[in-house]
Image: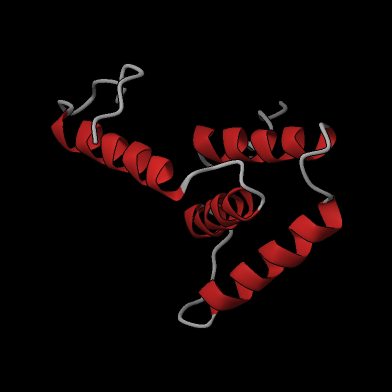
Length: 109
């Protein structure tokens, strides 16, 4: 009896973030060695206060790196990033348990 393979990513957002980063690299938005250097620095910084388990903490560091990188190359406005983050937080906190969390494309300031 064969068992199903273990998922590569713990959560869908990990896979989505990874895919977005790979896409940005493949379309020439940034070079992978530059990305790797930045991500390594973020991992080192985050790992100073705790051991990283490779799950949410790893991908949170990945997200922090991507956001900062996109800000540095002027592809993302820090205020817009914060608006979207705040909208997701509001949606998460107000969505009934078990219901899908969405922001319906509307970002409130």
